[in-house]
Length: 69
Image 1 (tube, helix red, strand yellow):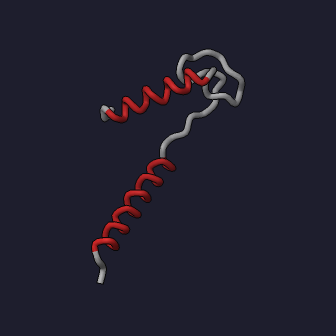
Image 2 (cartoon, rainbow, N blue to C red):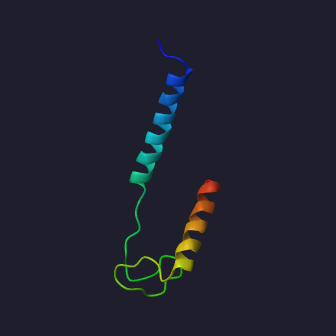
Image 3 (cartoon, rainbow, N blue to C red):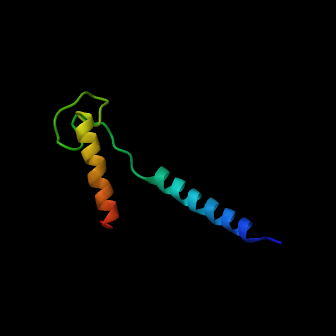
């Protein structure tokens, strides 16, 4: 017989699995010689020109996800 703890463990496992699957299926940024936030030219393998642009990009995307867009 399962008890409340077993049911809770199952629900937690399902939630974590769904989150991991969503993270793995999210499209990854590709390096293309430009900053993904400000469009400034960058070296081949960089995604952002500096940490400020990276942080601003992440904040903007988090806000978009929170607002459901």
